Image (cartoon, rainbow, N blue to C red; front, side, top):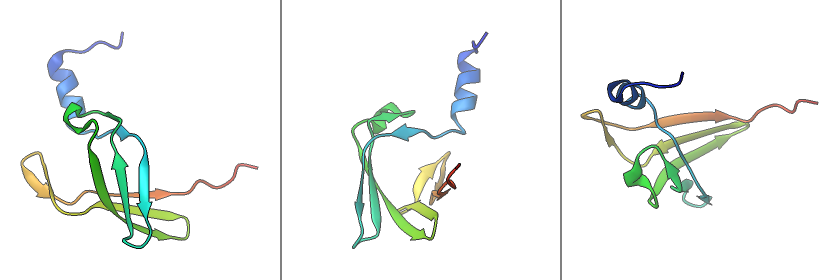
Length: 88
């Protein structure tokens, strides 16, 4: 159970992005900088990556500050977070 081949792991990881660590907000520049303490990509460990930040109501939009190489193509990565509603 929970075992796969090296090819299966590679296939699954190629469509996934995960990292964690401290972050720093610059309200004047409207940026958020991630400090990579944990990452699916070992070469990201210890790196700092800046994201352009936009907040409107309960929505946080982040995107890379320029195009990055993803699977052989230059792309701008974007993610949208919505604040969870209180459960009380």
